[in-house]
Each structure stands twice: as C-alpha cells, then as structure tokens.
Length: 201
Image 1 (cartoon, rainbow, N blue to C red):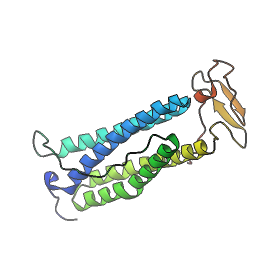
Image 2: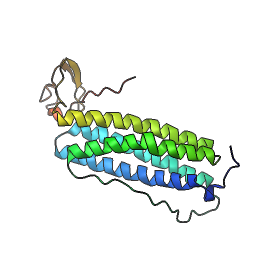
Image 3: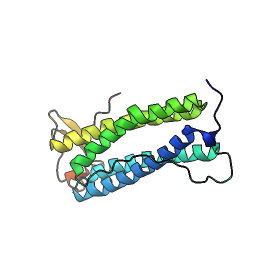
Image 4: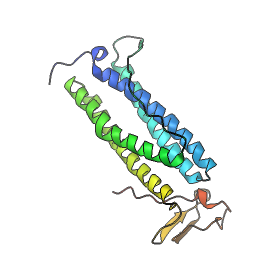
C-alpha cells in the first residue's frame, strides 16, 4: 500500500462527500415514494419505504461523520463533488424499477470502486464502510425487485400457496392465498396487510 494520502487531497474525501449527498437524496426520494404509496392505497409499502429512507439517512450520517472525523481543519469548506444522479419519473411502477437498478448499480459498481480507491489511498476503515454500505444497497435492490414484480403482476395480495398475512395495524394474522379484507379485527383494508417478501438467508 502506498503512503496515506492526506484526506483533504484525496479522492476518498470526494467520494465520501458524494456518498453523503447521494444517500441523503435517496432518503428523500424514498420518503416521496412512501407518500405516493398511501395515495395508491398501498399503506404497508409506505412503512417499507419509510424504513428504506431511514436506512439511507443512516448511511448519510455515517458518511457525514467520516468527513468530520478525517477533515484536516476546523471548518469544511466547499467540496467539489460533481456527479450524475438519476431522477425518476412519477409513475410508481417505473420508480420501483429505477430504484432497483440504481441500488444494484451502487452496490456492484460505485461503492466497490470507492472502496478500492480508499484502500489505495490508505483508508482501510473507509474502504470497509463502503463495502458494508454496498451489502445493504444490494439487499435494497433485491427487495425493490420483488416490489416491482409484485406490483407489475398485481400480486401484492395473492400467493400461489397459503402464506401468513398479518395486519400491520392490529397484528391479526390469517393464513391463506389472500389476506382477509377488511381485517376482521380492526376493519382496516388489505392495503395495511404486511406483504411477504423473500429476502433469502
């Protein structure tokens, strides 16, 4: 490994700043998607997207902390971090697909490259952080792929085999190929039922 490059002069600093900005924007976009899901009466998906937004904002905070812990000086001046960023359309189906592809690109291309640069510049801890965030973004991509497929096939509330459906409002559980709607306990519609996703091991 080469000598450690001063953080303020490193590509790693720019990449951390880019990651902070990107994760912050992703968090905002997931909040917007959560609101859109309520409009479409997909209330449980609102919860899913609020969780994804929380994940992204947590990543942003990690990158924010890295900037402040490593920056050599009391005040961080402007950091040049120009980069492209995808802006998806308002169509819900296309938004699900765009987010899936964006998360996959981050996990397979962007963060591994940022990790490689951090390692080469002498920042193994930051390299490790980029790799950890990449694993989470990969999980997001898988989840978004299932959301996209189920939404496209109108299969959010259908299963070829009996599964457990749980009302996210009151906790009532029912096993079957479809959830009961409205919920026999609280009267909420099926949009509040937890949608089963297969996230693997």
